Amino acid sequence: MADVKLTQVRKSFGEIDIIRGVDLDIKHGEFVVFVGPSGCGKSTLLRAISGLEDITSGELRIGDQVMNHVDPSKRGIAMVFQSYALYPHMTVRENMGFALKHAGVAKDVVKSKVDAAAKILGLEPLMDRKPKALSGGQRQRVAIGRAIVRDPQVFLFDEPLSNLDAELRVHMRIEIARLHRELGSTIIYVTHDQVEAMTLADKIVVLRAGVVEQVGAPLVLYDNPANTFVAGFIGSPRMNFLEGTVTGQPRFNGTNYCEVTLKGFDNTVVNLPFAGAVPAVGTEVSVGVRPEHFQDDGDAVLPVTIDMLEHLGGETFMYARSSGDAMVVIESKHGRSLRSGQALEARFDAGKALLFHKDGQRIYAH
Image 1: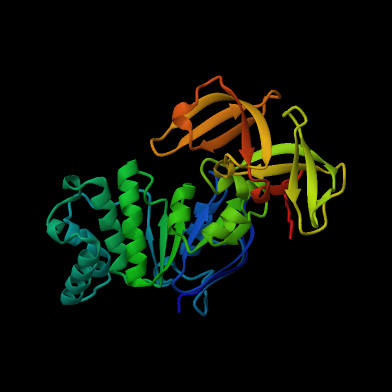
Image 2: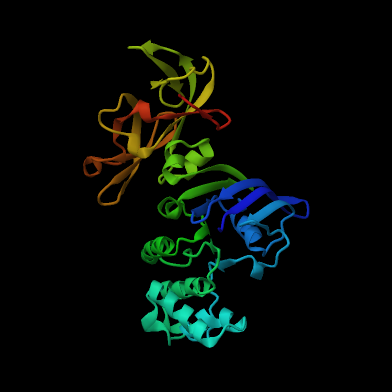
């Protein structure tokens, strides 16, 4: 079984700490995606798992074996990089079978494995072409095929789609998801694109500055982020954060509410339903509201003026500003009737809003 377990894994370059004590359990067959901004350590962590970077301290296990000092070629992993790294003088068939041939595998076995991978990836008509005669998506499929023929325990993908255009990225996401279903292998995938993470992952690992901020299924992270960093990183456009202060703890019809007076919105007051202990009066907070939670019948109202409209055909995003210069992004179903410079009252569902401490940590209502 290709479980991957990291225990207090650290990686430093001299005095610079890149990975700072990561604990992570990846079960056999899971599709796990590392996400985070540039410089957060996601590619370094992947390279540490592969053996391309030494682990400074901590323990890495793949299956039942400690892999800290095991040669990369003996870890049972195969890696697909951002660059295709194909040999330009070799055909598709030769590129896919090169590692097996180099390892002394019998020719008939190499042919069988290459043919099987080509069938999975739809490369059969291209086997005699050289890389220069392939599109970007076809080259990436060849690179994936080269990994498949090795029959690894774990696939490692390091931003494999970032060199492709938008249409090809969508197509290759579908291909990789289908590949995972067919092979049932453990996949660890690095990307800076949270859309890729949301569509591909069984489990997302959100990293910041070498620390794991939160781990969970895509929709769990979307609906229940642990802090403002995760809430802002997962979701596009990002969550709105409205700064304010707790000014009351009212109770209506048997339900406790947290009354927050918002800064920059003409002292607008919103009441958020709260099942647990309401934060103390005077607590500085952020109210998190996703763009799609604005709706005509919302019970909380924000006075704003439209700066810009982003028409995307089936949906419109409104970039609006309060009198206090606070920016809000709103998804609107009435985009065609709106105009830049227009003043309006934007309504949102207070029951779907999230509350965060000033330091960014979530205040849970339940």
